[in-house]
Image (cartoon, rainbow, N blue to C red; front, side, top):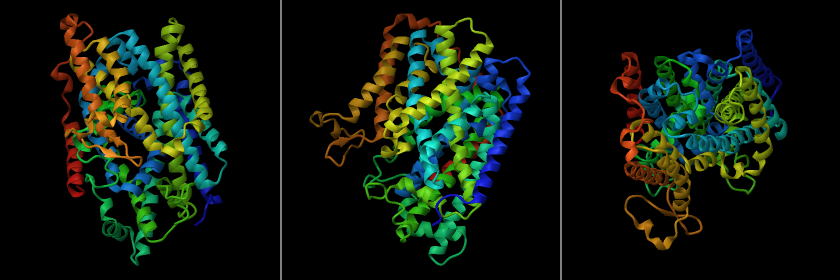
Amino acid sequence: MQKGLQSVDYLVFFFYFIVVAGYGYWIYQQKKSKQASSTDFFLAEGSLTWWAIGASMIASNISAEQFIGMAGNGFKMGLAISAYEWMAAATLIIVAVFFMPIYLKNKIFTMPQFLKQRYNSTVSTVMAIFWLILYVVVNLTSILYLGALAITTISGIDFTLCMWGLAFFAVVITLGGMKVIGFTDVIQVFFLILGGLCTTYLALTLVSQQFGEVGALEGLKQMFTRADDHFHMILKKDNPNFTSLPGLAVLIGGMWIVNLNYWGCNQYITQRALGASLPVAREGLLFAGFLKILMPVIVVIPGIAAYVLYQNGMFQKEMLGGDGTVNPDHAYPVLLNLLPPGLKGLSFAALTAAIVASLAGKANSISTIFTLDIYQKFFKKDATEQELVTTGRIVIVIAMILAIVISPFLGIDKKGGFDFIQEMTGYVSPGIFAVFLLGFFWKRANSAGAMVATIGSVVISLILKDFPDWTGIYDAPIYSSFLDSEGKHIIPFLDRMAITFVICVLMMAILGLADSSTKENPKALVVDASMFKTTQGFAIGAGAIITLLVILYATFW
């Protein structure tokens, strides 16, 4: 196995860097002569096309935790982890049809802005501060840390140098604003998909060669035969990974909360579409949905291939972690080290593209929330457009430096990036989604209920994570509980989210109904059926996605 990059790999990577940086600089120059505008910097002022919106959403979503973490989960549990990707495709249709009209009709720039309009300034400010902490401490740091860890494993470049290099590259792109991010993300996605498919093709070819066959299709057939247990989407209760993906919960339970909150109530993601017209925004989300269906081919199938190769005796030492046990997160870097020169550089560029695009998108969202919801609101209400843009750029640099400084202290590498992010955000996702959902569609939702749900989500999640055994709650038939390695009861993550969400909705309903002023709530949104009508083209595209998902789940049930 050839570790490190060869000269031709560096040339391929340099070509990628020049294309992305050059294109981004050209876009920036096109706008440089015009007056700086906060809506242009933060939302691209409606200039993003549907394909740029869709590509940018995927580029910001796919990062090291997907390439490394989901490939590792593919190695460990198989195709079932694809539920996060394929359920997201269905979620994007719901967001496009029901959420986007509400955001755009009310001219929403940020998620805290929506909360201020629908509830009050206190809810908005608390949520803005909370999101800033979450985005910097959890998301930005984990993306940067895991990205640098993956790159140093593959290339041999010093870890600290990798962190600073990735941060610098992302800052250069982010300082140009959302328009630069959006259009450069199209190139990022091109490299991401091309390099990812090359890695998948090589992995399947290696599998076929190990068993005396030739070709990627033969390799896939061998994987179906030799790792049949890795090709089931719905895990049974006796599966050791059931606590991560508890059976039908991926179809009718907590997985919907994960995805609807992420794709519909997340500044980091929705920001790409908030500056566009409704038809363009919907087409962009639909395009992102099609790309999500493709993602498991790039990030999960290689992990299953690595599992089959490992079971056949390959890279036994390379898959071991520092404690001497198999570390599934080594699967993707190990595969990349098997690539021939040139292709390895392309896949290395794909991984870098995923990391940099996610960093840039996350930093821009941090900048947007701080500038529009904290700085302009509390520090300088009369700030000029230029001052807002300048502040936004300063915040981008500060956030990236903070991520570099604090990331080594979070223990991300021990937890695993994908699991780390899911667990941390899972404490608050149920409450946030309840606040948004009822805020959209129930006029009696009030600010007291929003505050209780937001804070209560964390409290309830912590209680359910470590509920005392003597309560007998674990014998309840509505969900499954398990014993961990220490003999303590645990509730599966997705089940815990579903229970928390239901409790948050009930608390909001009680407080809303108890408040007589909400009967004629002036803050309630105007919602009518005409807002949710779609074009025939959108309906056909959405139908195609749903049909593909039904076929996939029926095939790999």
